[in-house]
Image (cartoon, rainbow, N blue to C red; front, top):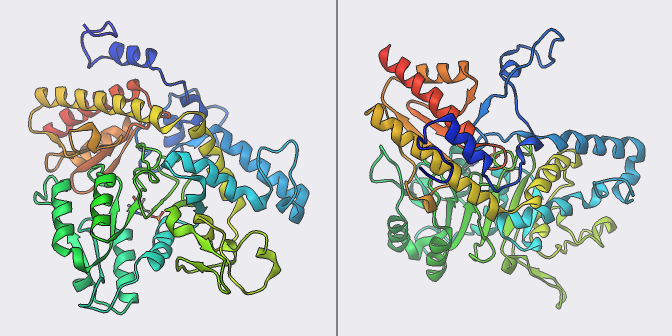
Length: 465
Ligand SMILES: *Cc1c(COP(=O)(O)O)cnc(C)c1O
């Protein structure tokens, strides 16, 4: 017997008891969870004849987070502000509005974002989109010397997310270099379980140390769910004079990163995965305070190089149209364009929820949810040997919420069909991997149990056909 009073972990009673004794306040009711009927209906609108339907089991927040209930309200506030105030909505505070004037809404979003990534407020900006931001950041932080002289190479994973690969490759070409020579690719020794041990990463850095201009790695690997040792790898790179940036697409809102304390040079992330801001929503960047300094002592201001736009201009002179770029100090001096206030209303609404709790609390809940998922999968593997393997690292410190499961050959399509029929939403990477991510804000131990129960029957069916 454990503290929940139930002996058998693989039971709805045990899962419900874990939910009942959970210490994190209930945020699930802050989200819209699609019902089975919602998902199966060919229309968006619900016909009046449709009966009640139960919520789906949504374990796909690593791909697209669910919609916070308050997002509709805040988007409506934006629409009202625009409708009733037009251009004056940029400048005037409204006593009954939860949103600041349009002109300040990006700063407001950055202020809410900073604690989520362990950054100083000045080190964060909310702007653009992830791949675009990676390009902007590389324009600042990848400044290669000539081929064969000094630092001109970039280290990244061989199996990086394709967009990151394309961004790095095209930056190298943009500088007149050859990607075959300038890209140093980290390859896992076992392609079947493609984890990159920290020791291997450090060793590869050492092998190329004098030629590396930049390292770009993911905080959490999208495919395996591996959580990289950001602090240790960053310190190792710095000790060899190499700049290092992190793609936090799968880490932000998932694990408790401390970008400032870990002395990361720069980072970028999207806000539609664990950050629940909606498809393609405006993204975030981190710029270490070192690279945000602006020295206006001399005749020309001195600052770290960047591709610039008017939104990075000092706020007090932005509208003077002088053609003299003096950036705002900090990450906001890297902004380019007037950001979409419509989009930011969704980002702000989602970040409000994160600010009602903390990443420390969410991570604690997440560790328990994922450990329960692992426990149930392991017990299932004993009953059904040979049908699947967990490829995500087994150590909780080396992973976030997600477990990636490799199915035995030929099972994937049938398993997916069964999961879909039962209203279980996860995502697949062909030919044989499913990724399952219980998000601590809205997923429950009961969701995890239900997923495992449905997976077990799906595996039964699929392995018999
Ligand atoms: C999700 C994801 C992206 C997506 O980039 P967008 O520019 O937002 O389309 C890029 N890189 C990684 C590692 C991702 O996980």
